[in-house]
Amino acid sequence: MQSVSHCNLCGSADISFYHSDKRRDYWQCRQCDLVFVGKHQHLTPTQEKAIYDSHENSLEDLGYKQFLSRVSDPLLLRLKVPSSGLDFGCGPGPLLAKVLSDAGHSMAIYDLYYANDITVLRDKYDFITCTEVIEHLAHPQTVLTQLFSLLKPEAPLVIMTKLVINAERFTNWHYKNDQTHISFFSRNTFEYIALQFNCKLEFIGNDVIILTKPITQHALSEELS
Image (cartoon, rainbow, N blue to C red; front, side, top):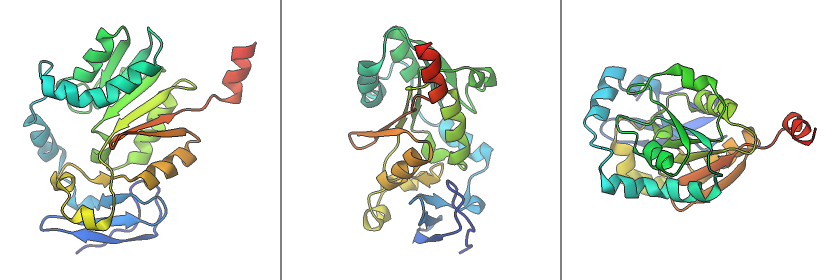
């Protein structure tokens, strides 16, 4: 077992061994509670994309649409029509973007492998969705910082990911068996993130997290002027 030196999220060196299986070792940060896989056990981009290519998430998949409704339903209740959104990590079949577009919102999409148009990462958005993405990130702090920079004041970042409950349940957790999953978040981790970015935090059901960017003093001054 090769040890790791710091947390993938907060950079803390206060980490401890969490779990090991036949393929990988898992570590936990005592500062932000992230459970993660060390860089030396990450897949290569080619290996990672091969797994993504095997997924079948088409625009006509009603089961996938129902799955994504856990994000789209609470989000649509919060949005004014029309709003501008970004589906970050949309995958090869950007169904969520289609659902939101059909509801009257303008949607941009980005994905490292399937929609790598970095120009969309220069705009500002009324909301951003990030479904089943954050668990794949080797550097979640960098990506979260980027996404919050793209949000307008009072705009939500809506994340979908399965949450770590405890070490005992992690042992038999199917979610960790996907080798593209390398960062595992708990409620404590998202509470840490909310504090770091000064965001309002909400949990919707078991796997949807909404982080709402605060209105800044500068933006408030502009709004009142």
